Amino acid sequence: MLVEQVPDGLEEIPPGPELAAILASLDISRVAGGDLPIVLRAQARQRSHNEAQFLRVIAEMGRRDPFAGLDMVATVDESARFAADELRVALAWTRRGAEATQCYADELVFHLPLVHAALSAGRIDPAKARVFWHHLHPLAARHVESICTDLLVLAGR
Image 1 (cartoon, helix red, strand yellow):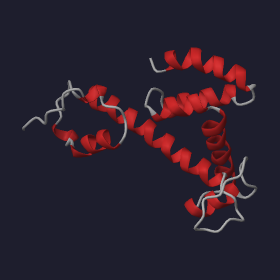
Image 2: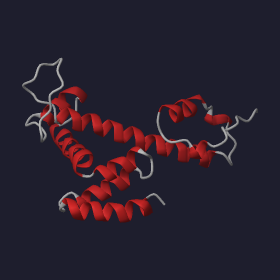
Image 3: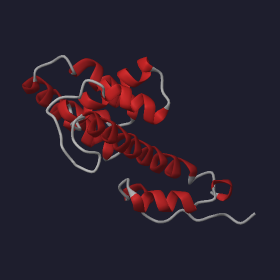
Image 4: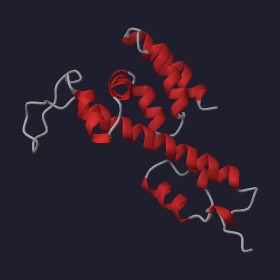
C-alpha cells in the first residue's frame, strides 16, 4: 500500500482553515504509523479551536438583545434571560444541557478570555478549559488573570 506523506511542518501549523483543509485531505488509513501521533496532535489542536469557536457563537447568541430586529446586531452586557432557550431550540438540546452550556460558554468567552484564547489556539484541550473554568469562575478578575498568566503556559504540556 502506498504511504501518504504528512506535510512538513504540520506540527507548527496553527489551528484554523488551513490546518482543517490539510487534515481533511489526509487518508488516515494510508498514513505511516510513525506519523499518526503528529496527525493526532494536529487533530487535537483543530478540535480545541473548533470547540472554542462553537462556544463563542453560543456566548454571542446569549448576549444579543432579544428586542432588536433579527436583521440587526445589538448586544446586552449579560446573557439575555432566555438565551439558553434559544440555544435549546436551535440545537434541540435539553433545558439542563442548554443552560449549563450557555453558562459555561458565557463565562469562558467573557470572563476567562485567556482560557478561551488558549483553547482557540489549540494550546489546551476542552477538558483542560473546563478544569480552568471550574476552579476560576467564582474568583475575582485580578486573581483569574494572575492564575491564567502563570498556569496556561504549563497547561499545554
